[in-house]
Image 1 (cartoon, rainbow, N blue to C red):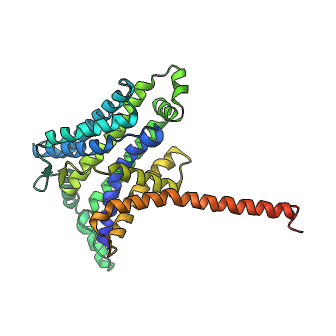
Image 2 (cartoon, helix red, strand yellow):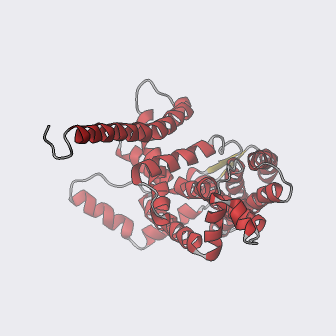
Image 3 (tube, rainbow, N blue to C red):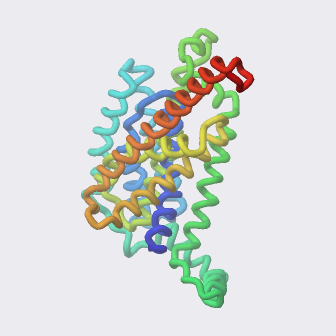
Length: 328
């Protein structure tokens, strides 16, 4: 049970990077971008192909992000310069990326099991300085279960994910970031102020897909393979993370909203892991579980709000009947 939850948190913190990318398009830019289902695989494919061909894992991971940025920019160009509907532009790019990803990998699946990945290097570095054995020794002395060998990966990924969150927060507070947020609220108003909305949208969608592809490259290295179908349904996972996070933690500020997205991604993975431990559910039911989670996250806050409004109306009626002083 502990190992399963640990794995859920480990993958969730990486998927949180992807969810941040989805947040930028869907919430900030109000741009329903389906490119992410293709760019996620592109990141995984570029990272896997690069590592297999001898490129250092850290460089391969950065190349994955660059590939995602290019894919996102093309989607932005199709929408802004080609005047194609944003949803359709994303679908077209996602479709094109399927073939491009196959070209990059040369086959439907690339294995990294015999390759040195970024996480493998991190584990070796952690062991070489003795922190791994020291922590497990402390846990054994306390009578606690030892952590999995990848615990160092989780700690480093937490730092990386939150570093990306801080950079995203800073970016959204810059002049360009504020313009992006304004475009999502009222594009016509920003255009009336002579701002180059087309360039801003292209860069925003590109940045979003760079984060998604970065997450894809990391997931490929964590899982040990890249598969052409690994991005299927990814947009729903991203939206589920955003919706769960917003429902539980709110969105009053940018800092709070991005934190909610990260926590929502982790909670989503934990929920799915716990759901799959139920006897009558199987691995093939994961998409159904995701759909149920999203529906629950969307409907539950509305039901709670509706009940609050109902109680407020009842209280106001009682106040009117009693003259506001509590006496009839």
